[in-house]
Image (cartoon, rainbow, N blue to C red):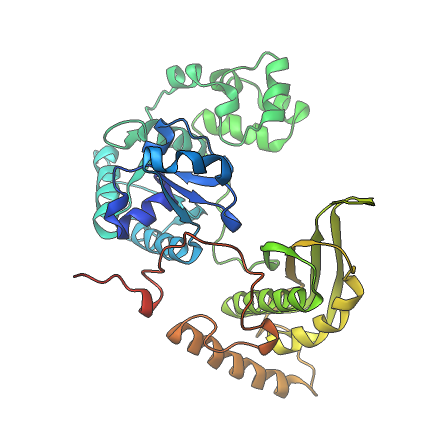
Length: 417
């Protein structure tokens, strides 16, 4: 059996754990640069505010409805997610995170045990230990568990266990609401007369594979109660690591773009070292706005690929190569909105064939950055950083409504008076 555990209104719920004044108030969490609404409290939903509404459209309603606004605090949300996944590990050795706020948990209880009671225990413990409300859906497959979770979150108990014969439920569910069936696929299925989840589950596998693909076939198999989706291995090393951010204003100066790339390279290199991997090279890019002045110019991207002299996890070595090519992709006069770095060609730091003349140097770099990473973990991010990343960083994302990092920064711990 599978349990899908999904945190309710996750970003908003994280904010409420540490700020009780947000309880029973309409709360909105905004996207990067405080652009639009990406998480809503139930009270905000009841006001008819839709997901993705731009913040400027919400401004006229703030005072009238006492709406609280928060910028995305990814450090807080990431740490709360880690705590949720850790607690779920107490219930099963097989926890498969699906996103920052939900995970599949494999459950195998003794005969005669109550899965409903077990789900209630999961929900109760998560709320007691983290303060986060969650919904729990249990079923024989991941697809059905996703459906059960959706049903459970609409009940006061927040829990639903799928029946052994879910035909009645599948009959009432539009095919477009089945996990993994998107808008385009829905239209194609409906043209073939497949309008409900029950009708999809009744289709022959060969027919679905021929008309669509193996993914649709597996979805239908799962709807029939037979597991068909393979579990992802969380220990599988990444094939690439990346970091990209939107700027708080249109950037035109080359030195600011260079600082941003240096900062993003540092972040990706830290992720790389955490996985004990090294990179062969990097893709670096800038994204710019369209121009509507005297000369009409479309928006677009400029970028290039850098190959490192050898596999490396050293931020300094990466920056030495990347900084040399940045002038070649900078277009003077364009207004830049975003930049990013993608490290590729990853290999385990202890698995590659070393260069006899450089292995000793790389080993010293590993020890240097191991020390730097440890200091930054202990004393806060960017306690030590490369000067090329800049000190002011005015281009960083705009987050005017940012809450403290209650769980990851000693200087921002919650104070009880």
